[in-house]
Image (cartoon, rainbow, N blue to C red):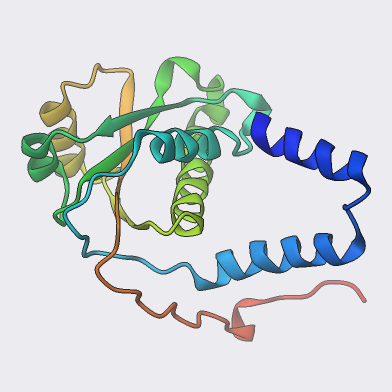
Length: 190
């Protein structure tokens, strides 16, 4: 983020920040969203620590209800642990958890699911932007999967795994699915 802010400031100072640059950046952002697809096959190459940090920074840039940030991220690179929790062989998994100790009280307690989901999507989009592939594999609310991941990683009771994001350098580039369906839209107003 600091690097992005510094680059934006440099462009503004040098006068290079123009409408065309903004349009190009906007187009790239939209293209990244529209071309992301689930990847389930990876080459045998580690994901660099710098990229893992960017993924985690992207996750923590997600919005959260009342800025509670009720998430916790477990980065797994240990091959024996990966084989226990990952449905597909990969060099990296990020288990996105809700930290129950950080949730809102009362009915707002379950907002952790939305918050952790937004963080998960940010990770997947950042991975795609960096040439990595990834797939969301559900854990919560399946009690068997939840228990399996908790036990494999030794998670404390306050951490509830929502999903396992399996990430790596893809062996292929799957085509994104066209999910556009106007029947799923209701318009109210003009």
